[in-house]
Length: 135
Image (cartoon, rainbow, N blue to C red; front, side, top):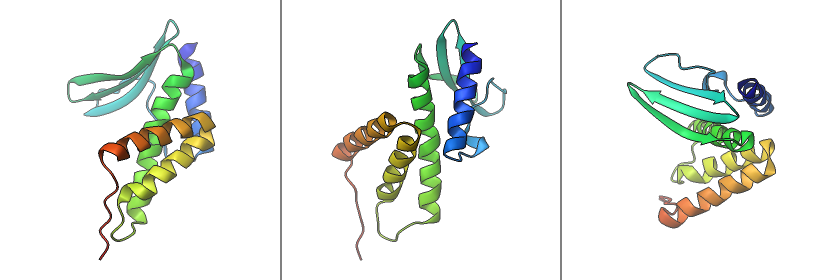
């Protein structure tokens, strides 16, 4: 049942932001070169990634909300980066567009998730500020 609940929420929320199917993690490891998938057992949710023979647990939690936030952080980042690359502004640090777009997509899903993403971006910018190349 936990896996069913996770998959239903993934599908519903992905639809809300029109996320491409290619970005949605699978319900199983497909044994391809690389794979993102979800697992759930005994009320524990896992979001997993495998590349070649290296498997990484991206998050393991009892919280459906926490695993969904982690998954959609990846999905919305990929969507935002794709959008930015297709609408690049010459000389502007690409993160200006994609950080804002990602935060907005996350807020569409859940206000708290958007705020959390904005906080993560703010921490990143302390370490690595925007670098615009004005000509």
